Length: 513
Ligand code: BES
Ligand code: MN
Ligand code: ZN
Image (cartoon, rainbow, N blue to C red):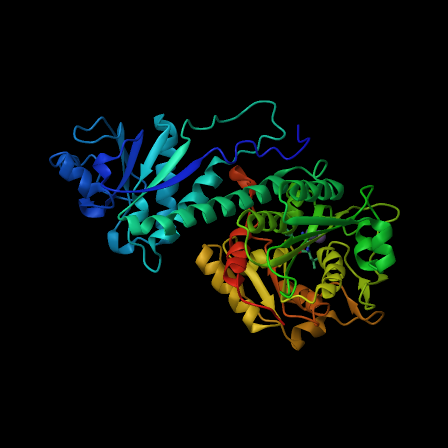
């Protein structure tokens, strides 16, 4: 159990691209779309023609009218070489957007997984979706399928749900000219999907397994798997040497020693300033002496999801051989109450030299991130982006749909907003400003680590901004987006898709600054 990361099920699906007429394709199952009002959608017209109007007849009879969520499986249609044909309702043609498409992919994939087919030819990505081209739909399909294949099995003695027999998914595209772009789309979708699943696995592992030193071992595993990745791990002595008094104050109350993990991916020349990603790696957050209430405290094992998204993104960048330089920094620690733990009122000195009065030991994320942000200066970064499950207040502000985003540079902020829209992994900007920053004034130190009840997400951002003044920087608060609670409790792997898109957009940008 959990000896190493067991992502054994990932990579089971092969993706391919084929042009040519649907009725001639041999496959276990063909997937075609029907729009509401019984309109034949992607792939359906060709199948209808080849079957003397069978599809139109079935639809007219009312077996399926095209509403979203519907599926209908047909066996051995004469005139068709595929063993089965799966009709998928896509809703109203004019209203089909990326969310509707994603939902249709999930529904279709469930039906496919249950039908016993070993391979499939997929036509839904030929649907017209506003603002998205076929390559985008193919990439998003692969990402969705990869995520659907993920199971958390590291700690189960037997399997809950068997994997589907399906092993190969081929995208049917209209012409030969579409093939190259579509292949590239499958390559990106697979790398992003696997990056997301790595982040989910690390997030889902419990706090007694996924400790700071476990994260360090996972970084070394990435180094072993990808020649482009190099890893350095600092122990507490090395951190003390650097003066990381703020970070070390958080791990002092834990039996688990902190680790400072640095992953380098070099995909461009030495003259290219690196993009730096920093992820909060609190492997469990009890709150420390300012201890949290017991309800749902187990979910604080997810407090390292920022770190997990750095792992996932570094893996995706290396898998795609992106032409960028990337540094992934993970300060990892456990926040526990103990005789040596920080007490409210304690004052610590950060690596930057700034002193911090710790008024609440539960505001620990910023205490480890600030030293990581100072450490990042040495790379003369093109930009630094940090990700953190930082504030419950962010859930109040934005719910579970969008990441909170703040930064000191409009270019970086806009690049992240845009990447989030492209990737369907959206962020929303919140302001920073002196008015808010003043809430951090302390009578006894350079600042305090909390800013009062109001605007908690923003004052946390202001705290970080005090350590990020030497470069272009942005901060993603992923407290509401990094995991799901309830019946589907589990890490989401967000914002790996946003970050990978951000790096794709940066590829070939040239030396900077
Ligand atoms: N990891 C938590 C934030 C969090 C809480 C994320 C619940 C998701 C769900 C963070 O370390 C924390 O405890 N923040 C405090 C800050 C406060 C003491 C200023 C919070 O949000 O209550
Ligand atoms: Mn906390
Ligand atoms: Zn925390």
